[in-house]
Structure formats: structure tokens, C-alpha cells
Length: 326
Figure 1 (cartoon, one colour):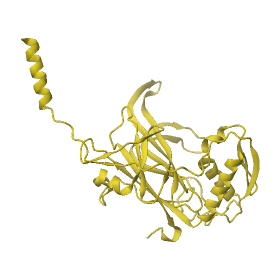
Figure 2 (cartoon, rainbow, N blue to C red):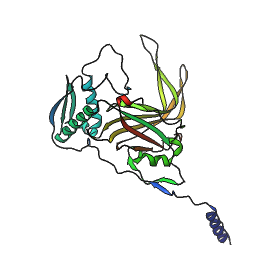
Figure 3 (cartoon, rainbow, N blue to C red):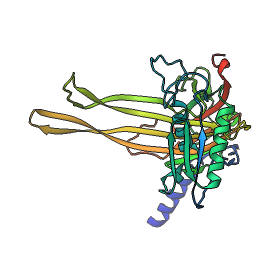
Figure 4 (cartoon, rainbow, N blue to C red):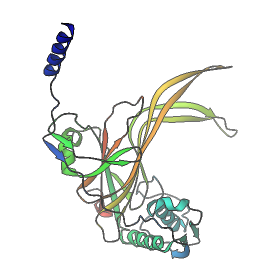
């Protein structure tokens, strides 16, 4: 009798459990558009020189993580344009290939010297033409933390694997259906508009939970330098148009996460030192994003991470320099 009763109870329990509701609509991922600046080349290297004049860029000097605001400085290095172009080329044109010892990229006076295969040289020239044709343009970035519903009327068709997670490019209108609250005007979690020049690197603090002090460094000429650890999310972005005449943008994105797991007590001669232990992870990829579309980045779960959101939607578009504040 006991086996019969167990079978009946299990059957009753399975009947009582509600079935998970399947989404009524799946938002489709958009076909991946190839980057015109990516190529795998094993051909022999050749050396070419590209002259970058002092007036190549419009406006004041710019560098990594600097907003497009006038920089007050007494001295402007006349070589900053060619150095800046070198940084962009290294980041956006076949980035992994520069680790090959046969390849090289360096600056001599106002010239960018590139030693690489012929097909990569063509893409370097293409990128320089792209930067030249977009000197009066900015890229506007914005990001939204998004919650992917486990049950509901809208679901995601599929996502592609990237380093440290999953990702895909979607129509912005479809993502708004996925999590309407995230994109509402009253949402406090979205980042403000982030404006950078074409090719300029940007670093955005999406969310910061805590700032932790980690030791100090003594100095002979002044007070000690306090060591600081940032606990939260940092988004690193760089973008260029996908060719001189393209309306799509090639976006290189990395999401860094630092989560506080524990605080260790280290007994020292002077007393107990509280040392924070952080879990760090990165999710990164390169995407070509057409107007009206956005990247959906889904990091892998990290032990000890707070469930701030399951994904991050990133939108990018080019705007004229004069229209920045409109």
C-alpha cells in the first residue's frame, strides 16, 4: 500500500504545481553586421606611413575618458592628434593582431607608422578617412539596467556568447517591451547622456555601491596617498562609424563588476586591519549597431553578486557637435 500512496501523493503534487507561463511574444535578435575594421590576416607585414596634421581634429586635445569640453592648458602638444589616432587604430582595427611581434604601431613626429599586412593597412586607411569625415560629430551613449522577466508576455529569442556572458543587438522598440519600467522617463537607474568624440574612450560608473579604503602609500613630500577600491559597475565604451559613409556604429564595450564578498581581519603588530575581498568579472564584446538599435549585455552570474539587474541595454548614436545640447 505504501508505494501506491506515494505514487498518488506525487501525482497530486505535480497536478497542483502551476505550469510556467511561456512568453506570448519573443523579441528577435538582429543579424550581426560585420565590422569593416576586423580581419584575420597571416600575410607578411609591410610598412606604411600616415601623416596626421596638427589640425586633423576639430577642437581642443582629447584623450581617454575625457568629455568633449574645452580643456584649459598653457601648453598643447602639437603631436596629440597623431597619438590619439594611434590609440584609436590600436583599439578598433583588428585589435588582437597587434600582439603578433611581426606587427607594430608607433609615432614619428606627425606620422603614424604601421607595420602590418596589406589588408590591415587598408583598414587603417579606412579608419583614418572615417575619423576625418566625422570630425564635427559626437557619439551619444546611454545605458539602462534591464530585468529580464522569468514569466510574462515577452521573452528573448536567443543571445550570442561573448566573453564573460551573453549579448545581442535588438531593436530599441523591442527592448522597451521587455522591461517598460527600465526605459520610463522616471527611471532613476539609467545613466545620463554621455557625449564623446568619435573614437574617444569613455568610462562610465553605472552603479557604485560602496567606496572602500585599502591601505595607504607613504610620501616624503606630503600626506600619505589613501588606496581606494570601487565596489560596483564600470562601463568602458569606444565607438566609431563602421566606415566613412556608414550610419551604423562599431562599439567596443566592456562591463567591469566588482562585488564585495567579505572583509578579512588581518592581525598586525599595530592592530587589526580590515581588508576587503572583492569578486571581479568582465563582460565584453564588439558590436555593429545601426540607428534605432541597442546592445543587450547579459553578464554571467558572479558568486556574492547582488542582483542589481540581469542585463544592461546600451544605445549609441552620432550627433552633430552643435546639436549636443538639443
